[in-house]
Amino acid sequence: MKKRLGTLISAVTMAALGAASMGASAQTAQLSEEAFARPNKSQEQQMDKRNTVPKEFETQIIVADQAGQERAEFILKLYDVFATNPSGETMEEFMSDTYIQHSTGVPNGRNPIAMLFASSVAQYDVKIDVHKVIVVGDWAMAHVNFRNVDNAEPDDLGTAAVDMYFFGKDGRIEEHWDVLQEVPTHSANANGMFVKYFQGE
Image (cartoon, rainbow, N blue to C red; front, side, top):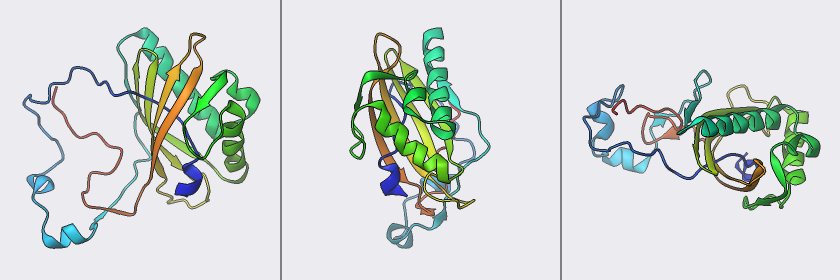
């Protein structure tokens, strides 16, 4: 799965959550003190927490203005097309004619990435869970989970991705980078790979 998704790209960003001060009275809701305890020998040697993947969630959109909101909605629409109707033609709305690809398994241009998703959609009920979208100027990032891109398992944990996009002057995506990690069945903590717990300001 990871190999196939190593080729699946998508979505966005440059850091930027802006001005959140890391020292403010932070309540870390739903996390107990044990979550931050020094690992014992058995924890150091094995991943002993079962990983879970949220299927019911609300996408977090982090933007500074209306232009950023519109760009975030553009990215959400792109992922929907990836999962339902990917083709060279449908990608024209989202990707420039000179689309530059940095994901190592996919050539430049919008057709290769469209063909990649199209082969998955033809065989499987592809699901793309977009957990977070951050937009800062011409840069955007998405925190995503690609599920069932190469299998039909109902409990497929998916492949976590952070996609980064750079937008051109015509409003379409000019360039893309990504990092991918197959979601493992077990973890050294019980936090999961997608949920935000911090409740401070």
